[in-house]
Amino acid sequence: MTMRLPTIVREALLNVRSGTARAGLFALVLGAVAAVLGGSDLVAIASIEHEADRFRKDGGSTIIYRFPQGIDGAACDGLRSVDGVAAAGAVRQRERGYTPAALPREPIPTFDVSPAFGGFTALRDEASGAGVLISEDVAETTGASVGTVLHLTDGRPRVTGVFSYPNDGRRPGYGYAIFVPSDVLAPYDECWVEAWPVSDRLLAVMPTALVGAGSAPTASSDDTRGPQLQQLNASHGSTFDGAVAFETRVTRMSTAVLGLVGFVLGAVSVGRRKLELASGRHAGVSATASSLQLVLETLVWAAMGALVALSLLSLVIATGGSSSPDVLCGVAARVLIVTLMAPALGAFARAATIREAHLFAYFKAR
Image (cartoon, rainbow, N blue to C red):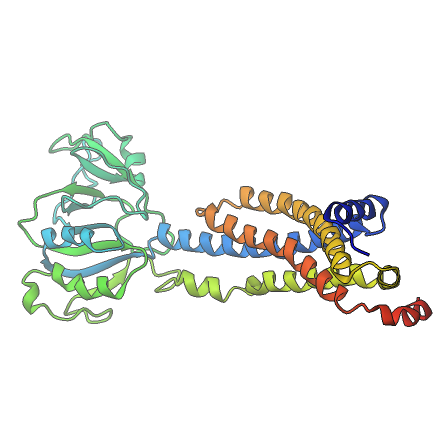
């Protein structure tokens, strides 16, 4: 018996509405599994993003090339042109710091910085115009803020930015300090560079920031006589490889598990009706029409399950505070596609195993 497509669609919808397909039950189970597995993967990915953000904000991605009186300020500023570099600038400490007019016996550690210094994620400074950068502790002590002047015993420089330098494991010495833009004629002590990620190419060109770079010694992390390569904050490890963390996350197989569960649910939804389907084959319903009807029924409750999962996954994305929501949306989209397609494939595969010749065996086993 040949069934036209409109008839097949109508029969599928009737089975869904009448409860024959148990659409509500299968949709609820599928939606719950998709929400749990997909949601756990989204949470894991968001956690990796948060770790990466913390690594940057705490100074893990800011490297310091230290060589007292051996850093070329202009060359250090020039490292901004290297791919992946977000900020760069040179620093040297003054022998005599600025002294607040209200506290003439308490000089503030003062550092000269090269013209390009600023914009570091770890400092969270937003300097604008010509003037000095002061730490939050200095701002609190002196009462100064962005746009005001700093009352000193030897001048009144304008404050163009306030930077953050908490005690979270980063190098000491800058929590109570003033950064003063200066010329690049005199050598500096340190070259700060923020890059994400810190590439081998950047490390290879760091020695170009040295005065007389052509004969520069090789940098070391423990050689106190030569250049030293350090992190602003090493408390979170020397590196953060987001790609490795993503590929090795515990939930990386969640979509595959969801696909397996969806396939099994689709197969079970068809297998429980094998007597009905074999009887239809005996009555003349073609295998193609029967399989298409089952797939359509399965797609209906799979779509319902996907909607359940979508609502919960959207909530996870909205409340996750991710810095890259497009990444999470891409993962959620894959979860929804698997939620929709895996049960249909399972239903089709199980329908292909049902034979009219097994009708009597199905009848005896019911």
